[in-house]
Image (cartoon, rainbow, N blue to C red):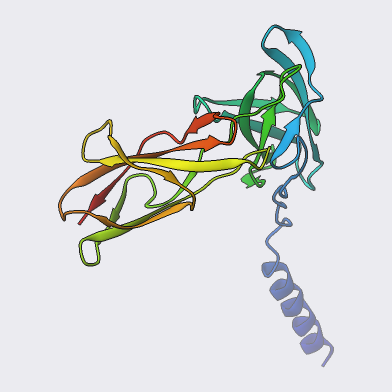
Length: 229
């Protein structure tokens, strides 16, 4: 009887040992919460570096399980993206004044290849003495870049998002056509959408939106394209 009990105990230990994977799973770094510059804010706290340049300190909350961060910064006028790494939750970057930017943070850890991406915020980097600010370039929402779509009744709807730190967007001009540099199609639109735009199957279309504010400042979304099946 004692021998049988010994065998049962030994079998139980073997089963328990086989059930262990030998290590705990490595936690992924969590998403960073952005704090400064704030979303859609007018940033006036930069330190003047030179004519046309200020230094801005980006800040975000430390993310759990993250050892380092990548700051991705996009100049919304030129579409140039720069990435800078940091081991702390803030980073000083020199920026052009009178320029809109967007930024986000990628959380990383040396213990895993998994990463986490923060939200993306926009802000306007103000220059000394500036009283009027150009609107943010319109964000194209549909059709998106290089999207292939089916035209219902040979018509599509163009839509976008417009915003301005002054909250004085006056209107939109839409450039649209089959040429890579599309001509003006509709001007002085007050709503961020254009319905019943005629298209033909098998064609590729190019379009952009120019936003104008009440003081005559403008911004360009850049050219997008889509193909109609």
